[in-house]
Image (tube, rainbow, N blue to C red; front, side, top):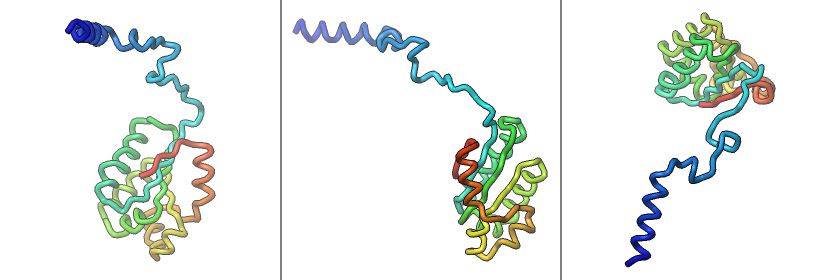
Length: 150
């Protein structure tokens, strides 16, 4: 019975101590603390591939638009690839949202290879999107910028 009481008492003591003391965490070795310095790569590329309208409205567009509005990044590019391009040509509300982003200074590119597969390159250009082969662009963006995908 005594080992059980001793174990319970030890466990209670450990739970009352701050976790940083138990783990021996100091400011120098705290892995949960983000000490990353933001460098001159204050540029963002959002790669939108999802054909899901809700993803477009409630994640991709909301974040991209607000990141520009609140100056979270110095330079923002939205890349439209695959099913997202097709969805965009079928939805006037999404088109208007993209037009407003373009008017606010967000560069919007669409992959010509993908757009040609759907036969929608002309429709995307009419929205104001730059349509070109973007494989090399994406490769360079990955090397030089911050890239997120949806």
